[in-house]
Length: 172
Image (cartoon, rainbow, N blue to C red; front, side):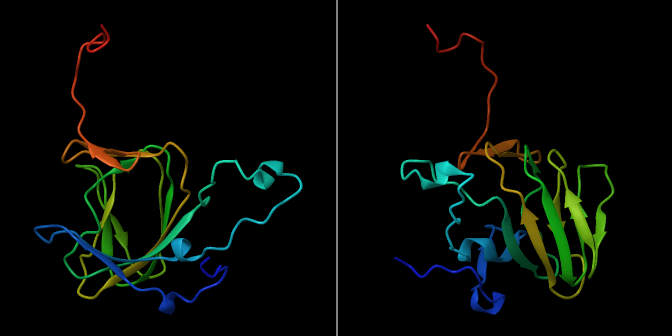
């Protein structure tokens, strides 16, 4: 079994880099919460945790450190069905891009920004140095995302497009 970690230094976590085929989107990420592997403590008031057959519970939140180089966007614009995201800007300058026609939110060191479910967003580095920020997400069950610029959905670890069909299509 791997060593259980309840504490880590962000300097010990490697950057994971994801780049789109044409290069508009490029994010460097450190997933702090994925590196913390300490199991939940068993509490007498929560007997389901003692049941070896109980479903595995995911973390109640995710924490990532993100670095964007100048001119790069984190990901395509999207919204979350249930998830809240909380951003803390460490260094650099950028913009939280919103729905078409909605002004972007400036981002600079010391800013705290919240994105509730249903708000279309992404982050763009509009400055001349790396934009570094933390994003903390509440990681709800039954979460899905919609990407309005490409009419795609993300749900259950699958990306797809929906199509309109008749109510009884495929039923008889």
